[in-house]
Image: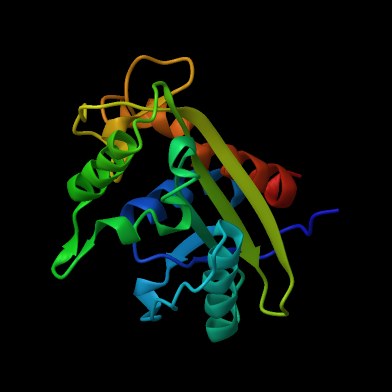
Amino acid sequence: MTRRFEGDRLLVATHNQGKLEEISDLLTDYGVSVIGAAELGLPEPEETGTLFVENARIKAHAAAKATGLPALADDSGIEIDALDGAPGVYTADWAETGSGRDFVMAMTRAHDALRDRNAPEPWTARFCCTLVLAWPDGDDAVFPGVMEGRVVWPMRGDQGHGYDPIFVPNGYDLTFGEMDRWEKNRISHRADAFAKLVKGCFDR
């Protein structure tokens, strides 16, 4: 059975303000106040895992150990079947430059790799999100989420972030980059993982 969350403060191991607001909104009804890693001056630990769950665990346990608070972390990315699941856990790494992240470059790299392989369409893919809630005593709970879909080209839309402009979720014609933010948040891989987290740890 999943351990219930009993406190009233949750540390979210992220320096991403948008992600922090999304989680805070999700937990409003449960009387939980959410604080971010940046607010407490926590460094971002090196993500050395080769699986989403490994990187999420690294971040969650580092934050819980440093603060004595339960900590929630996620690791997410896109897996493209014709690229043998790449970029996967290296989704953000594909966008790294000497002056920050360039996701147009990363999306172009993905398309070029598909073209170089002469991969036939549809280019099936999925966005994955793994949430880990860690307690200071070393215990944790894991909640994976998935959104199946396909990669398209050229890029479409300027909403969202990351690889959203080249990903069309199953059952839709719009890319995540063209979709209303709230609609995307309702159906996304992160929404899937959050629903499992809430059911497992917060619902009474």
